[in-house]
Length: 224
Image (tube, rainbow, N blue to C red; front, side, top):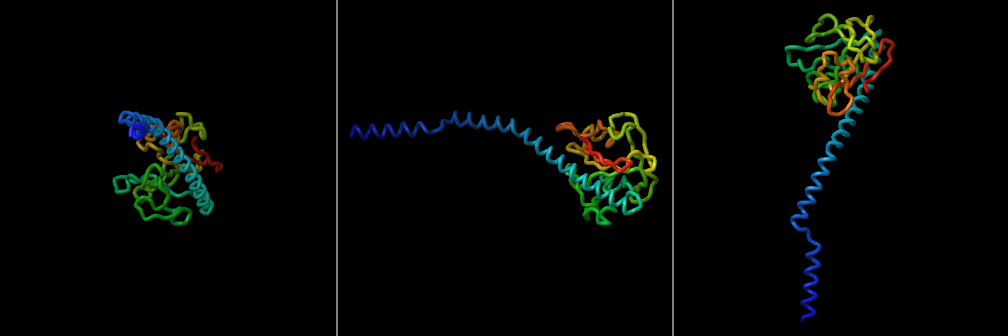
């Protein structure tokens, strides 16, 4: 009898030794929370970098589409579309409808997105497109679009530059860009964006536009 009681007591102590106390559980939960807090920013940055890489890839494809369109249209580029005081005001400098109509890009029926190429960082909007030359304001011809180009393009680090409204005079043929991870950041909204390098995206948390442009001789260049 005594031997049986001692055996049961030993099993009880052994079982109790394997259990976690409430304090131990709370400590484990706290450690997990700390590790999560440390890892989440790193995961967020990695996700952002993956999106940036995707944007560069998609802009590369669109750049090829623009050059193909130009070759098929005696060197001309599509007009720049600007909308104001209308339902499409938020779709300024949308991707050219012509690229969709002539099957260089996929088509879409969404307002402001005739060319089905959605900005990864700006859902329900296309990437942006601009070029010195013809401009459509709310769908009607309205002079030429003026593109600001730094005096040291393609480096684009200078604060000096000028506006070009004619393709034959401009050192750049066209520019396409994403508004980047923070569409309303000071860098993205810079008055010289997208061609001023100070407005370009460089690292997480700072915002800035992601850009691809073509020089007069057809060389394509992307922002860092």
